[in-house]
Image 1 (cartoon, rainbow, N blue to C red):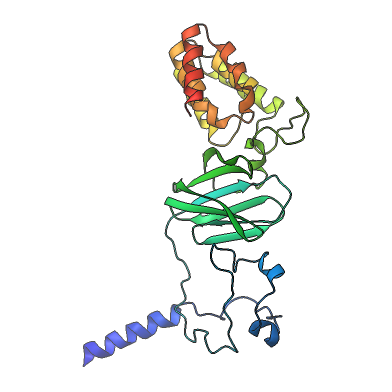
Image 2: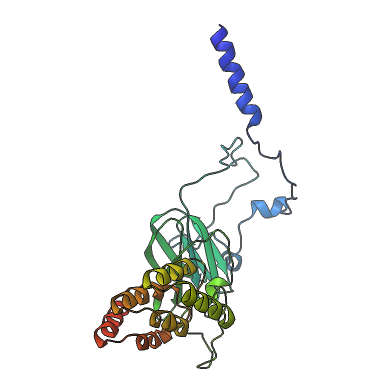
Length: 288
């Protein structure tokens, strides 16, 4: 009897510390009228919502009142099944809906950001005005952000995959798209966490004064790559500062993912002393 009583007290104690729905935060008023909640959306509205956009689903379920609602749902406060991100841009006029796994987003801005995605093979579907126009499968990794461009006449392009930092700067992804649309050649402006000229010069001078050997220089560069992007010219100068061609080559390969203007990476070739190293770097980039 004593064991039963102690067990009951433990359950009661745990329950008293569990978070309950409606016990924290400000309750915001539901502004949907009873009539709106009972009526299906029109076809025009349906094109701008998540309902009815999947292939083969042209009707919306109807309900009267709240009789089909779950009365006692099992709340899940901190569901954690992995963490990956997908950033997608569609630089075209139109209203697109993008679905990644169990998440869906629709807007006319052309930018779609998905967070809290599980790692593994994940389907991505793209709809235009409610019609499916593209579907493929992504291979997501935990603590990694996949960045993509989509063109209706060309397809979906994987630009790169980046480690997720502890903080977000939503403009950081603007510096890794394809060559800027509508911009004139040479009109590229670096955004996000690309090192400015002054900061890079400070970093470069300190590296040269503090580190006499290649390994020490490369260690400093790798440390900076955790938080910074570089231009092709900056990468060329860093690679040129390394003495041996085999280490130059390894550094140039590793820095490619941190280059903000990959279309100008040919500038890095000037840092090599041997033609064979240039060709190996070209082949490496071509096979990515």
